[in-house]
Length: 277
Image 1 (cartoon, rainbow, N blue to C red):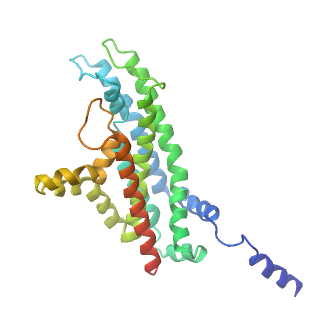
Image 2: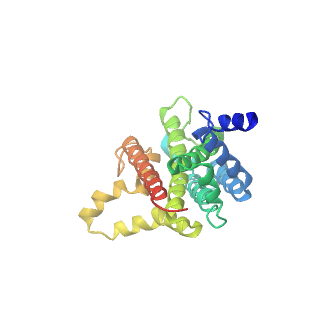
Image 3: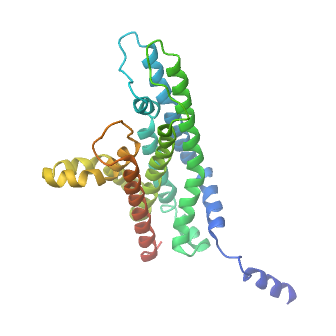
C-alpha cells in the first residue's frame, strides 16, 4: 500500500505532467530519428553554404566580362544564392515533421502524451527552431565569409564585404527569418491539411502560384496587395539594394513576414483544438 501510495503521489506531483521542455525534447528525438528529416536539413544547409561561394568563384574566374557587382548588396545577393532552394527544402521538412505522424496514427500517441493541443503544436515549433536556427545561421556565416574571401582575391574591382557593415548582419538575420519562416509555415500547413502531398503543394502555391494570381488582378488592386504577399515580403526582407527599391523596406517587410508566420501557426493551433486526431 505504501508503494502504491508513493507512486500515486509522484505521478500527481507538480511538474510531473507535460511541459514545453519535455514536449520539445520528445519532438527533437523524432526529428533526428527520421532519415528524411536529416537529409532535407543537410541538403538545405549544403545549398546555402555552397551555391553562393561557387557563383562568386565563377565571377572571379570568368574569362568573359563578368556581371558587375557594384554594391555590397549585390555581393550579399551572390553569397545567399542558395537561400530560396534552402527555404523550399526546410519548408518541406516542416511539412514532414507534422504529416509523417498521421498515416501511422503516431499523432494519437503524441496527443496522448501531450493532451494540450496548443502545447503539442508549440513543442513541434520549438523543436524545429532548435534544430534549424543554428544550422541556418552557421551555413549563412560560412557562405558570407567564403564569398568575402573569394571576392577579395578578384583581379577586377569587386565590392568589399566586411562584418563591420550593418547590411551583412541584417542579411544574416533576414536569411534566418526567411528559412525558418518557410519551415514553420510548412508545419502550419501540415497541421491544417494533414497530408504531406497536399501541404507541400500548398507551400509551393504560396511561394509561386499566389503571386501569379495577384498579377492577374486589376493593376490598382495588384499594386496594393503585391507588397504584402508572403513571397514578396520575404524577398523584400532579403533585398538590400541601395536607393528606393519597389515594395516594402526590409524592416517593415520583416514585420509582414512574421505576421504571416504567426497567423499560420494560430490557425494551425485552432484547427488542432477543433478537430479529432
